[in-house]
Length: 428
Ligand code: SF4
Image (cartoon, rainbow, N blue to C red; front, side, top):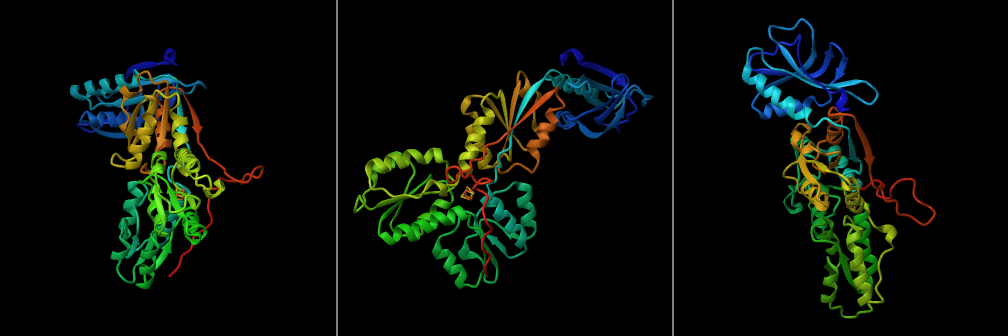
C-alpha cells in the first residue's frame, strides 16, 4: 500500500470561511479521479482537538480554486485499485491553520497501512434486556416507571426519559395509577404483590430464564424443605430476586464459600444457577458443592442462560491477536469498563471510545490488528461506523467474529440460540 501513497498540497475549489478548515468527505483528484474519504471524521476530530473550527464537504483538487485555497491530500490505492484518501483545506492566508492541518495530515498519513479489523458481532444487550427495552418503548409515557436501570446506550435512555419514563424506580415509591415495568432481572415477590394491591399497571418484563430460576426455587426445591444454594456473583442483578423466592436460600459466589455452608441435612441440599452469569464461573462452584454434598440436586444445564458466557468468550476471541482494542461505549458506563478490563487481560492496548472521532493516530502506530468491541452503552451502529472509518486508513480486512451458544437436547440443536425467548406477560 505504501508504494501507492501520495502526500500532496494541491490547489482546490474549496473556500473555507474565515477561521475554518474544510475536511474532505470526497475528493475529485487530478490524477486519481473520484476518491472516497471514509476517515474524514477522524481527521475532523483531530483538527477540533487542535482548537480549529471544522466543516465537511466534497472538494475538487487541481481545479480553479479560491485564492490560495490549497488542499492537503494523502491518497493511496486500495486492493482493487480504487483510490481512497484524506483531505483538508485550511483557511487561505492563515499560516497557523495551515501548519496545524499539515501536522494532523502527517499524523494520519504515518499510520496508513494494511490492517485487520476484528469486529465483535455478539450483541452487547442480551435478548432478555432487549425485550424489556421493547416493552418500555411500547408503554413509554409520563407515569411509566422501570424498576431497574435502562441497560441501554445514553441516546436511547435520553429519548425514553424525554417521553416521561423513569428508570431505577423503587416499586414502593411508584404513584398509584402509574405503570410499573418489572425489569428482566425480576423483583422480589413481596414488592410485586404490594404493587398489584396498589392498583399499578404492571408490565412484567422478567426474563424467562430468570423466571425459570425463580420457579425452581419456589416450587421444585422450597416444597422439599431443602437448603437452596443460589450460585452467582453478587453483581448479577437477578440474584436478589431469585434469593427472595424462598426462605431457605443462601447465596454462593465462589468455590471457597461452599465450606461455610451449614445445612441442617447435608442430604437435602440443592442449587439454582443465577442466569446472567458466566457458566465458566459457576462450574467450579457446582463441583465444590457436589464434592461436599454428594446427594446434591440441581437443574438440567439446558435451562442455563449463556448470554454472559457468550459475551465473555466473544471479547476474548476478538482480542486474541489484537495490537489495539477499541471498546465502543460511554466513558462512565460500568459495562464498558468491564469489557475494557476483560479485553486488557492479554496485554493489548485498550481504548474506550464513544465516537469514531475519539480515535487518535498514535494508537494505531504499529497496530496491524485492531479489535472493535461493543458495550451496552455504545450508540447504535458505532462499532460499524468505527470499522468504516478505519477502512479509510489503508486497505483493511474486516473479520466479523461472534459467539452464540445453542444449548439443547443432543442431536437436536435449536434453529436459533436458546437465548431467543418467547413473549412475556403484560397485565393490569
Ligand atoms: S437471564 Fe440471560 S437473557 Fe435473561 S436477562 Fe439475564 S442475561 Fe439476559
